Amino acid sequence: MTHPTPGVPNWVDLGTADLEDATRFYTELFGWEADVSGEEYGGYTTFRLDGRAAAGAGPLYGEGQPTAWSTYVATDDADAVAARVEAAGGKVLVAPFDVMYQGRMAAFLDQAGAPFSVWQPGSMKGADVFDVPGALAWNELATRDVEGSAAFYGAVFGWVAREISVQGLPYLVWELAGKTVAGMRMMDATWPQDLPPHWMVYFATADCDESAAYAQSLGAQVARPPSDVPIGRYAVLEDPQGGLFALLQSVTA
Image (cartoon, rainbow, N blue to C red; front, side):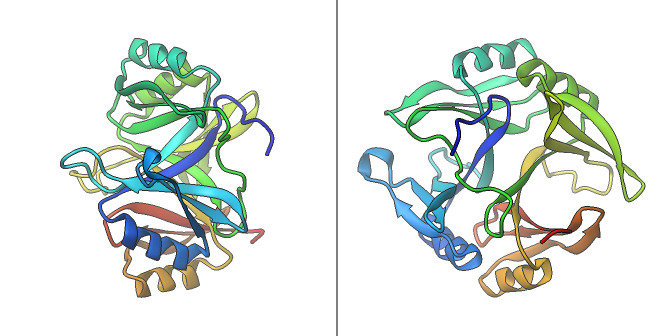
């Protein structure tokens, strides 16, 4: 793949309470192959789609840490991002560090408490495949502080928030240099109050209903059943360890 564009999401990975079962679930669901790293990487698993890196997974390291998918934004300077995060009111959870020769990463909380990460590529550039069934299709922040989040990510990555309408409801897309890179939705009163702000990852599918049903047969729970939106059809699922993710069948799928 070409070198990732700084400021654009380029990788997602799963921190899970049961890496073996998560590997079973996702490889069955998306047809991924599991490429397990050596001990020096703690058994980190790269999921490949037709040989190309699609996503990753690893065990949980913090006590009480929930199973969750993480969104990584590409950068050419993780340390500079860390400084901007703190200046904008966020928090550095994991300070920038080198992952051997693979790259450099850091993890943060935004001003409202949503976790996200950055990846400064070394030999590992990020995902090699996007927008085909089984690959990453969209990254979306769900937050109760839309204005604060728009200001925060604008300061950190230079994103510009633009409001659009989805089924008559306001929705924001983030643009960088005129290109859409991510989305944001408001967590209104209909969202569970104990659900914190978070980044949702969407994986492409050719048939949302079929994939959601198959995920259930593999042990997933349906958090939001397949629903139509202007760009296609989507569903939100909870994997067997409790990790939330979404399926997206685009209108061109």
